[in-house]
Amino acid sequence: MTGTPGYELPLLLFGGFRTLIDRLHSELAVRGHPDMRPSYGFAMQAVGVQGATASEIGRRLGVSKQAAGKTVERLEALGYVERADDPADARRKIVRLTAHGIDALTKSAEIFDELRADWARTVGAGRITALENDLRAVVDPAAYRLDAAGWFSS
Image 1 (cartoon, rainbow, N blue to C red):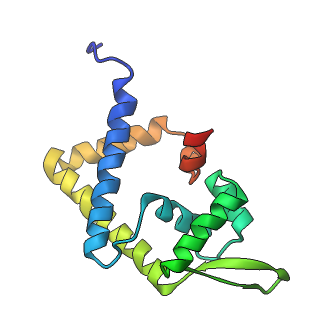
Image 2 (cartoon, rainbow, N blue to C red; image 1 turned 45 degrees about the vertical axis):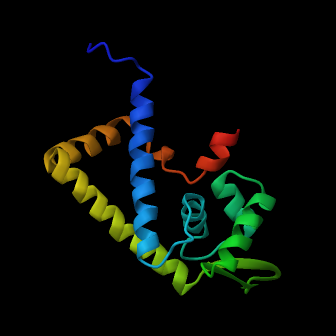
Image 3 (cartoon, rainbow, N blue to C red; image 1 turned 30 degrees about the horizontal axis):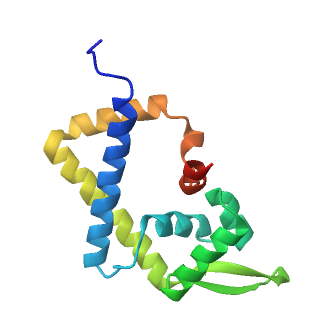
């Protein structure tokens, strides 16, 4: 044992996450997406390539349909999503990513690759690969969910 207190691990993991997300959004602003926020990224992932209803988005995010609806309204106002009639049910609306939304997600993926490369230059590529492998060994695949906002508030 190193004498490191147990509470430090989640704080370091969260700090690493926060560092990556903050740097992502700073770079997204430079690359044409100054209005993007972390919650918008989660919401756009919840919309997905096939689109989704507000209820589905709410379930995926772990928030109410109303909260999801407000986020969708903001994303729509910013041009990241659009609403369209559901071809399977005329009573429902489907939220879809626009070209602007797809561009934001594409640039996000590119920036995450760049940020990973920065970390690899700092601590070594082998150590980043080992860290990723170690985290895969202890993180349940079911933990890859989009409901961070709902989880924090519950």
